[in-house]
Length: 240
Ligand code: GLP
Image 1: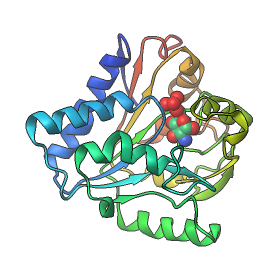
Image 2 (image 1 turned 180 degrees about the vertical axis):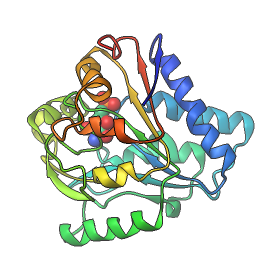
Image 3 (image 1 turned 60 degrees about the vertical axis):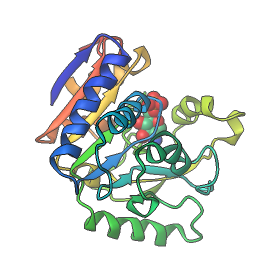
Image 4 (image 1 turned 45 degrees about the vertical axis):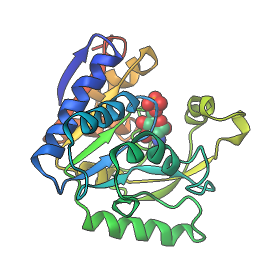
């Protein structure tokens, strides 16, 4: 794992944008694996600013997202589909047809997982962006998830519900279940970019980068990826 430590979140976002834009500019047909959460927001703002300044084209770029809450339709303001539209896709002018995410309102959960698994087979990711849960999760793969997993339904860990409650009006509104891309599929991406910011990620960053490779720390699997870049700000990297 290549590790880059930055002064602060702004420098993290600028460096992450450089990695992502290198992929976009070298391959106009790239498939971008994208993530939600607050950490990638600066990166997304940089991508939009780059397009405004340099006219970078996204007509043939396709995007695949990691995860989605079960029970929230794409029109719900707290759904990850809505988040992506608002914070990235509108700004890049990406056609909705070229963006893929699990359907949180699907009637049949098993069929929805199968649909997404088939789709991922057809869309090998040029790069996969990841945030990091404070408990070491990647996407919504909570501790204990098999490294060989594909898209599946998860019951979110209590710590994840607590971490994500800040984005909802009331903690009881946080959906308790979600779809997530599996760890095997995350590892399939040609390149992986992990971002971690803030002191509450320091323990997870340490275990991910320096700890044992174990299913108890899902992110530790990234040590096995041949081209994984971690960008962490000083606070998140304080235990390295
Ligand atoms: C959620 C998402 C993860 C994300 C994590 C970290 O749990 N499912 O994909 O990495 O939040 O979020 P933040 O960047 O806000 O700390």
